Image 1 (spheres, one colour):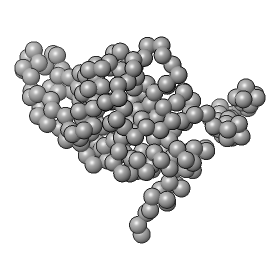
Image 2 (cartoon, one colour):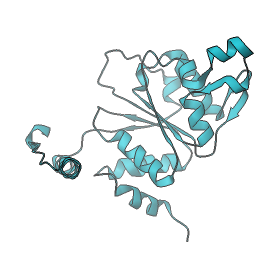
Image 3 (cartoon, helix red, strand yellow):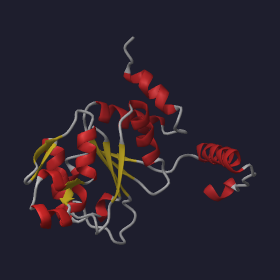
Length: 213
């Protein structure tokens, strides 16, 4: 029996509280082979939605933190220095970074706080998004599996340590604004969290939901 996108969405929604519209749009975008940029403050279920999709599809979820230390070499990979000294550069001593790992395994590469990453790193990322491949001398050209997607998040309200994202970068993504959910849904998330905490620790978690208003 063929599984429709609606069936897939219904199954994934069981792992996500609320977010009906956002989940539908993200699922439609990644099912169509597009890359997605989620814009919103922390704690708005961005990574939760993506993890639920990858778990349902059975593909890896590769998480990368966007910051000034995310150089192109850290994103793509590097050659083992000790082996290079002994053997020179070769395909055998290449250590894959998260981008190559996600491409090889057909996973979702998720970059948190995209606008904190250096510009040269973004240029490498955009090339991989456009070509679905990356060239690493002397390894050669590494091509992505069909389920490979690039997803990212950024907090547009936080300008500490961030850089402006150019229009040319923006144009490569399907962008979706994700805000805080209504009070009743936020309360449901808290109750689920408290039930899970009691199951894990055997204690009662007391939460004042009024602080979420």
